[in-house]
Structures are given as structure tokens and as C-alpha cells.
Length: 218
Ligand code: DX5
Ligand code: ZN
Image (cartoon, rainbow, N blue to C red; front, side, top):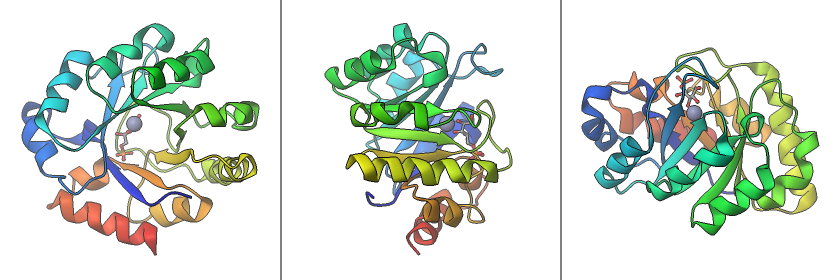
């Protein structure tokens, strides 16, 4: 297992002041940018132009989570926009191995996401192609949803498969992660934690990043 990393999602930040909002999480390992196209999920957020502007506004690397259809055709634009890690959904990719290789070849970390009802076992052989696997712990689309405990066995299973294959793949969780739920995720084997509303509803987002980190490391 890698070291613990905390990745605030700006989905619940003030979109009218995004540059400042990103400045409030200087101790984060990554900034998680939720890209939604109103087709793969019923919500619409950023495109590559916004990602490029964000990348210029912070030294913290960007982790782009693409909740978009036709990931095969659209993902590389986010690498070119400056995201250092790009996550596509396996449910939206026709050729996930080729796509992961392309993302890596263009210089970003390649990650693949699973919605809550998508099992991990069929993708066991893909793990060596991935720098990170994202196990969603809510249905993608919105911040502030309740953590789904039913996803915990899949986190555990993903960690088992990573150990079996001896890969360095990071295991990220996203959705409903808070001081109440982060320990469960860490105990199941996750090492990269996305937290949106927990961080941006705190008076001091950067202090919440530290508190989440301490709890995951405990
Ligand atoms: C949901 C997004 C998440 C979201 C998490 O579809 O992928 O990254 O911002 O928000 P919270 O932490 O509030 O569940
Ligand atoms: Zn996300």
C-alpha cells in the first residue's frame, strides 16, 4: 500500500472564486476536478479550458475525474490541459487498455473508475496497466451524498487483487468520504481519499485535510 494521500474535490467549492478556493487547500496532495458532461451523469461542470486555467493557478497537481461518455475520444484533452492524473470510467470506455496506455504515453498517470454496481474482478488483468483504481462510494454525479457501505467489500477485494499481482496501483475512494467514514475506507485498503463537501464545508479546509489525513493514518 502506498502512503496516504488526501485529494479535495472542488465540486463543492465556490465556482465563482475557484482560484481562491484551490488556494485554501495548499497541503492537499492533489486537487480533484470532477468533469461531468450531463450525459454519463446528470450534471454539468468543467471542460478542458477550465482544467487548463486551474492547472495554471496552483502548484498542487490536478486529478481529473472524467464522468463523461466516449472517454476514448475525450480523455487526452485533459492530459493536454495539464491534469497530472486522468481517471476514466470503465463503463464509458470502449478500449480501456488502449486508453490507459495513451494517457501514460502522453505523460499523465492513468486511472480507471468503477461505479458502485460495477465489479472489480473482471478487470483484474488490467491492474498492471493502471496507476490508480477508483472505487466510487456513491453514484457519480453530485457532491454531498451519503457514503455507500456496500462498496467496502469491493475496496477490500481490489486491495487483495493488487497484492496478488504485486502492482503499485493506488486505490482511491470517492463519495461521502468524511471524518466519519475515512477510517472504514483505509481499513479496507484504500490509500487515496477524495473528499468534497467534508473539506469545503469546513471553516478551515486545509485543517480538515490534515484531520482527514491523521484519521486515515491512525
Ligand atoms: C461525485 C464526485 C465526487 C464528489 C465528492 O460524483 O465524483 O468527487 O465531489 O463529493 P463528496 O465528498 O461531498 O461526496
Ligand atoms: Zn470525483
